[in-house]
Amino acid sequence: MLALAFINQWPPDWQRAVEQVFASLQAQVGRELPSGTIHLKLVNDAEIAALNQQSTGQNYATDVLTFNYQEGADDTYGELADIV
Image (tube, rainbow, N blue to C red; front, side, top):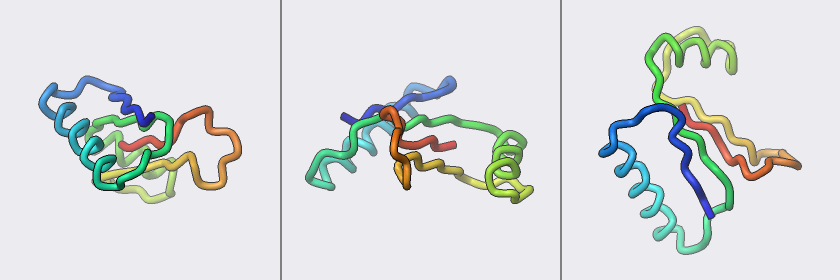
């Protein structure tokens, strides 16, 4: 089963909206999504710019960063991805 982990405080209506999007995705795919956890975190421009610099070497704020733990991973312990 796919689980969402909201890392920091999210407005309740935003959290419900994201949960509904993932439920809709599951229904549209028509098959079980991978089991595991996707971590979601809201950050400000300074934090995402620092994460972007650290992970890609690009020194600027971006809209979204994703880290997929399934690509080439032998041992993921159920962690699928981080989305910032």
